[in-house]
Length: 379
Image (cartoon, rainbow, N blue to C red; front, top):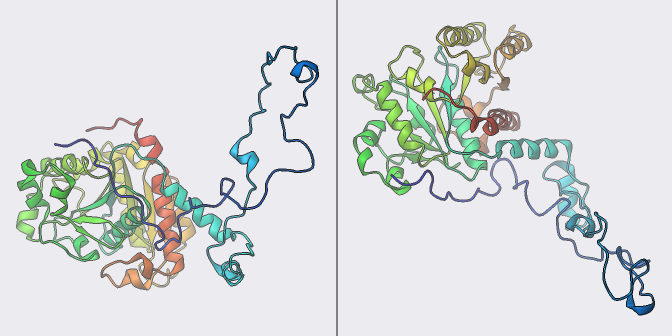
């Protein structure tokens, strides 16, 4: 087995969330034009007195120690420049003026940049996310792909989603299919995998760079996917990937579920914006609490996914408050026609509200990245 990770490729510039927020702007951007005050001598300048010594210094050239704070920093030498706008009328003015008139960022641009910075928080090792729901039809697989695509499109490390659904999972249908290989083939050939290029032949990769490891499509075979099989799969993947998302089935008693929960760093509990969906998600939390996973529930994120254009009479604020009392955070994803299609997911085709919601979900999950390295869970 190779070392923990090969050097990943760099982050993809641009993408559905706009240009890289770490671009050449802000206080450390290089500007043309003078930035030193020409009205008087520069800071730290001393005229020489008799004997070549500066005033207050003994003759003979022996210098006294300068008081702290006299060294010039880059921030002192360069003028602060407003970041260029990325959207709206500010962007139009900026482009129309040949980039000479810079109105600065809009509040939406600032929010988006801050969310992207949170998504890109440092991550050491491999972070494992289990996507759960007791009820089908709530958009769990769609949410898995959307979250994984958000991470893969913005971060420079490798992200993979594993289909652990025993009932002919549909995760592999969410990106263009590049191989018919499944997790069963990967386990069969595990002893021969040495490099990332070896494991890549068993996965499909979407436009966002998210990779997917498909489940066995024969239900009789996939039912035999055990806890040991799942642990072997994750033990192999964590040598080559920084984020592993597991799209779980709806049965919490499935043989692989204990392995999924024991190795997970966090959970994403997906609920629809309906009464039965919320009750099923709440029942999932009850089951986890009763089976020794209360700490894991406490650092989980609840997602209320609007799979229909309207929520009817359901009070989503009260539903959110219910999950907020039990989970670390709650995120809401609005109805989106592209996600509702149930086909391959392309972040560029999401409407602005859904795209922002996906970014908020990614940032919320990533808020736990800095804490994962100091946490020792059951393995």
